Length: 371
Image 1 (cartoon, rainbow, N blue to C red):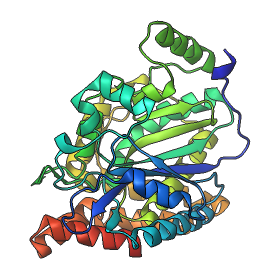
Image 2: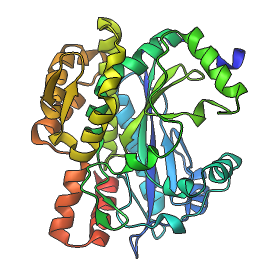
Image 3: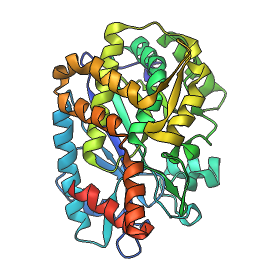
Image 4: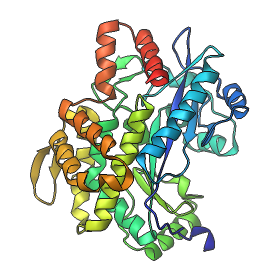
C-alpha cells in the first residue's frame, strides 16, 4: 500500500489553502469567471499556486511550505498583491468571507474538471450549494501516529477556530443569526464530521483500505472531516475555518494552529474518546454564537467561555511563540478574543452602517485588497 505511506516531516511546518470569492464590481454578486481570471493569473509571476474550485465563482490559493508565521504572511501578501493587481484590470473584485451574502446557489456553475463533475454527479444540488469559502491549514507531523493523535487532540479546540474565523453571518440575502453559516453546508455531506477513533497509522491504513474496497471513497479527498490526515504531504489538515476577511487573519490562524500543535506534541495530554460527547454541541455553539459562545468540557464537566478559554490558551502558548516567530500573531488572536472581534462582527457592523448588502460586499472587497 505504498500510495498510502505517511510522509515523515522533521520540522513543524505550516501551509494554507484559501478559497476566495470572485465579485462582479457592478452588481456585487458572485462573478462566474474563474476560468478567464485563472488564465490571466497564469501569466503573472506569483508565488504559491492558484487554482480552480468547485464552482466558477471561486478560486483557491495554495501557499508554499513555511516554518514561521512571518514568512507565511509575507508570501500571502505577495500573492494577494498579484491577484489584486490582475483584478484591477478587469471588472472583478476579490474578497474573503465564508459565504457570499446574497448569491443564489442554484445559478452557480460547476467548474469543468473530472473531479468536480464527479462530485456534482454524486452529490447533486449539494455541489452547487458548496459555493462557500474556507481556509484549510496544514501542519506537518513527524509520522502517521502523531497525525492521528493531533486529529483527536485538536477536537477540543475546533470551536476556537470556528469562532475566531467566523465570517459568514449572511446567506441567501438574510442574516442567519449564525456567526458561521458555512458549516451547515459542509455538514450536509455524508463523509463530513470527525475521523474514526483510530490511534495508530496501521489501523488507519486498514480503515482506509476497507473504505476503498467498499467503494465509499476513491481517495483521502473524499473525507470531508473537520480535520484529517494528509499522508502524501505528511500533514494534518484543519478544514473548519471560514475564509477570513483578510490575508493577515489567515496567517494568524495558521500560526495559532502551529503553536497549538507544537504544545500538544510536547505535552502529550492524554486522549479520551469522551471529547466527542460534546463535540457537535460545542461546534454548533461556536458556529451560532462565535466568540460569545459557552462550551462544555466533557473531561472536567465545566461550562466555560470560549473567548476566555482562547485567552488562557494564548497565555499558555506564549513562551514558545519565538520558535516560529509568531508572537505578533498570538497577540492578535488574544486581542480578538478579548474584544469578541471576528469577521461576522465586522460584516454585521458594516451592514448596519451601510444599510445595503451590495455596499457591504464592496467594503469587504476593499478590505481584502487593501488590508
